[in-house]
Image (cartoon, rainbow, N blue to C red; front, side, top):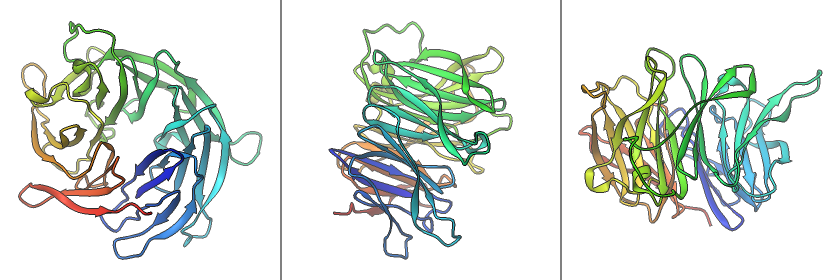
Length: 366
């Protein structure tokens, strides 16, 4: 699905690719939610409040979470009828005093839960539970963060042993938390803390990070070690460039195994990242948005003698007017959807010769 809306004074957008590249439903609207396919006209699903600042579909694109400028979290579900294409509000509560800037769903293997990030950098984790034979209701199960070191982004990843959560902070620190009990989303343990640098001896002044972007390797289970991407938009060049971090099982630590930046671009701010699903490729595909444009990278799977993975930038795309805010791959890892400051939603693909190009673009509604 694709989703875009305008709420309050801040323009916010959310995109979600469905099960197919172009037959999936897509949502585009201005303070309203519309659904369409490539062959259909847009169809309105619901109208969102004027103060809506962020939204997020769950993993199956059957539930929509929306955050507002006044700190209200809303959950919308499709009506019960099998053929229904309209959403209804099933939960609404004020979870923060101020603006909600991001909502992230917990992987469905761990129930229905969302993490909300406030403008003050506080994370609030909400879970849908059953208590004393009462109907399903949403309850807060965890809160963390403080104003001195704001949480900028969080993402959840599933390893072979547990659920992990990576959090990026405004001081440039990265923290990895591990869920101790799969039935208790309130029980998290700090597994690691480090900065997004390739050399531990790097020295720099106090970092001021405006935003961060994280993307886990979508490959689940198997023998592959847990890994994720992270890049910052900050005043500190060493933190900015996108790095791939992988868990070293033998030494129980996270190590940087690749840096996705050509020499002259190291230190460029990173606005958004997305790691593509891999169905049978001999390499990984990663998308990175920077001030230079939208870069597509290939990440090799065979490390060198230093444990580093080979990287190659295969495309640098332009098309968006201004900053790219969010990117999402389809389930096959062949189509990339992007949206940003210009309000456009663009779809990108490569041809049979491996040349990347814009396949489609959706105009914002008025």
